[in-house]
Image 1 (cartoon, protein in one colour):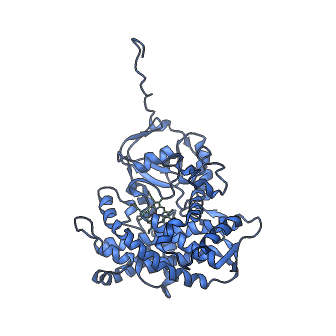
Image 2: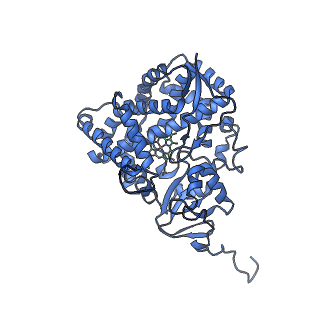
Image 3: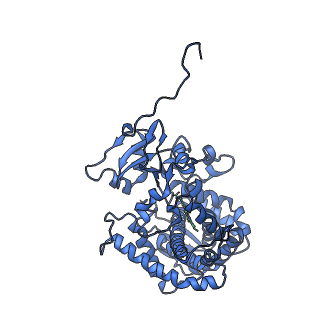
Length: 446
Ligand code: HEM
């Protein structure tokens, strides 16, 4: 600083209404684009900067890039409310979901829930999965079939056995339908439960699931079992507090949905990528065959390095949750703009996962980008966020890792699969990424 000059002060913040606004189509704004392809939608916003206003269901401020992810998810200053972000989408069908709680309530629930994800419990869960996977895969037909519904049925079966401690019988289809209805209700345009529309179907499905869970609570409280339901009934925080019956029901329904829909999405993308890249399928198969046991054990998980790269790459290319909503809980600022309290804010993991400034050839399937020598995901702490981050970081991240590796291990040892030449899987990316066509594959027994 020279004598008499002023220190370099940051430029004053610009008001909210100076943030670029992308109007989109009359009446519907960017909603059709967002529903069709959230990556293309985020790309079209990106040309205006890393903070852009647009209208999907309502006007939302989209913040783009790893710094934005860190600002919103890490949120050391308590600028954002998860409750405010998620309520519109999930409150009618997933009331009491931990994902839609703010502190101090969130911290309290998370501490108790954490008890159901301790190492000893996880070891039991992975052990319980093995026979469920074996039984399901043994019943698959050789030849052409649609992969997505099979994987969805399998992950629901695993969730029922491992989470609820029950083997699914005739109620399997009803439960599957109930979760589909609750998830679909999140995007319902008509938000009131009017028959026969999506919100009504979702609310009705929620009621059925709640009755089912409630009918089992007394048994789970009476005797501790290895399943997650029982762990939730028994789990206590450091002060000895535990969940009420209503809270157990709310958490179980949300956990069952969060666990099986997302892992189905991850497994489907992996199966698709491995069908299009048979050299990788053979590498992973060789790794699976190198282990003596048919079922993966907890101790084997850490050694599944190449499977882990493929899983990470699948979640990078197609994160099951392509965007994460919040609401500004107080006035704050980002990128030189003021963000007033009450502003709906969204970040876009799928956009960050395709930024050429972070990833080499971001659209290519290249699992070795996660190898220690390259570690592209470490170029920024919030470059790779399929599981979110901060206080709401996915509590089931390690469970998902265990489940995906366990299913892949058995799938690779039992079946080889391929897709038709030139096939490209058509994705429906919201609310949770999945194929529009069920992913047709041809299975060949080994
Ligand atoms: C590949 C699989 C999965 C993906 C990609 C995924 C993704 C996510 C993401 C992005 C969030 C953060 C949402 C936010 O910040 O608003 C989240 C939260 C959560 N996930 Fe997962 N998830 C997966 C598997 C699971 C599994 C297996 C479980 C249960 C066993 C689970 C249970 C939860 C719960 C309870 C939360 C809320 C945590 C909190 O608010 O404290 N997820 N997940």
